[in-house]
Length: 101
Image (cartoon, helix red, strand yellow):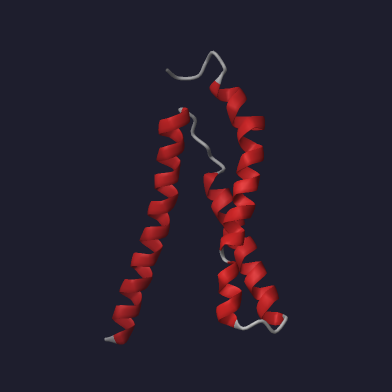
């Protein structure tokens, strides 16, 4: 019975991750009228940076609970990448004459 509960919780977690990615895609498309195909890649980069940073801190002897306080670092890295991508790649497409609406 406990395996069933774990599987249900895992599937709810996975569904919530997919919902966050889909909500971000629809938000970007609704505001900018551009489909940002790099959205999933940015999510993956944030997850990788977070896992790497937590792994490095735990390997360095930092307590696990303290290492998990650094989780927002992945979001900060992705925000910086997004701040570079938007004006360089997305804004020229949104101002092009072939843009929708």
